[in-house]
Length: 274
Image 1 (spheres, helix red, strand yellow):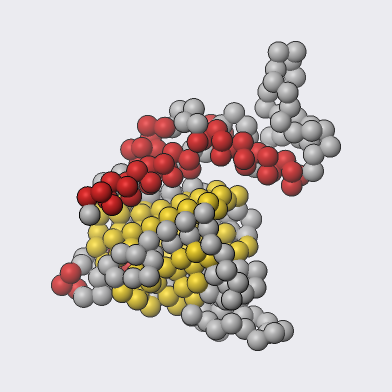
Image 2 (tube, one colour):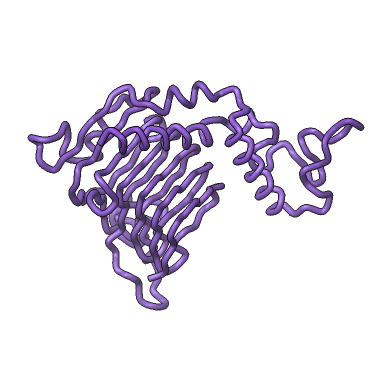
């Protein structure tokens, strides 16, 4: 158990090192902000390095090259927030979720999250014991630095069954794809390990509309997922916005099941089509 815990902390530290810095601290601007085609952060003088982007680079090529430059830079530990990242990677305190109230602080994941300060500035580890938690979970925008640690992706499952056409939105309106997520991450510096996020909605029939069923949506910067599973059919993983890291994850679906506008790195991922 001690060795597994040490490996987990080391993995979280490395994920934090890669992710815990705003784009402005890098030698290259994040996304395409501040750059024009054919220009780089160091272009101009005779002694400057060659431009990173050719003059005929398309916007998509620029974004991809900038993202890979950011990954290489952050992985090299040459940034001023290295010590800050390490400090935030290790927990200030932890909470336990268990379906049996005798063995945990809370019986639902949402209750554990709601117990945190509205503005959270310290790393909190929420350990979710084995079980299937049938609940819809949302992390509000200012509750940053949450780590969600399951007992194993096959043992700890959070699930719900909303679809885009579920009539449970305001005034009975359809939820829409964005709000159909079983688990929604809206706060920065979220880390998850060894847990399954599942949307239980069945595979839609050909031509069906409004059946987008998101298992997890992440709409904040600097998130990492290690050893997690994402299960669903249509639109399983909504990689909405920000920079994210997926390590040894299993992502399953049928139609457009990884989508969004995020810049993400998927390492050793399994992506089967059902």
